[in-house]
Length: 330
Image (cartoon, rainbow, N blue to C red):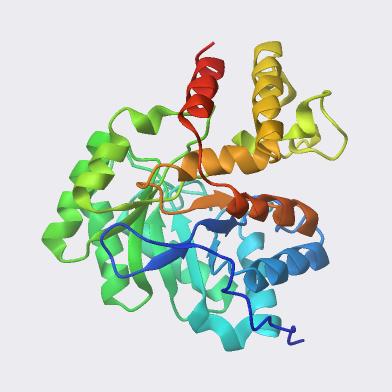
């Protein structure tokens, strides 16, 4: 079915240039890591993707192993794209990745040329696409020369199967080396996707400086710390939350009393800002002009709608930032 597409879909979204490239990304991008796999309801996934597109979210981020089962998020996205949004492909930025375990044997994991290019072919088939806009090396491979991994990314662009390339989960030193190899090949690194939130701040110890120096965009994943930086866990672990699911990445033991105290105090600041905690946590990342976009997940249209309201209040006072630092450092 063809969905009704809003003529005003670009009116309220903010778009940032990705590093020094010609590409702009919405400040909020939709990740399909959770809630879009074979264990989830396809109609819910369809509703979320429709709402996202009609809200000006043009960037949809996937990986070969997203599901569960692995590959099913790409398959579901491909179905939705073909049936509902195929006429709008040129208005969309679709990304995928390879680097984690996808199939058995020595060629279905890490960063070899064999794995990355085979995986990209499989991803394109699952999504029923001729190309992706961004193809990532999902993680560095300690046993494969970084030159081989970057040459595979370069080859994907030269084949016409990716328009841009990026890296994810690379350290500052690894990022510098990878981007220098890509530069020498003539295919610059567009973007880096690190784990970054109020509770996970390793990127501030050098990586963001390298990205700025090299003119590379940054799109943090898990900006809400798998849902911890929301009001969802203020009173424990609710049924249906990520921490309550056996196949999720957030576990009950990660929700400590110390974390809950910080969440409670942060929520008080958010209330003063007339924001939800999630909105404030996303805004807090976007205050840094080195951040191109933040990658959010969504389990419902209502959750996505709430997160999008961050656009109403991205600025912070010096007092607010100091208070937040005191809470996070405590």
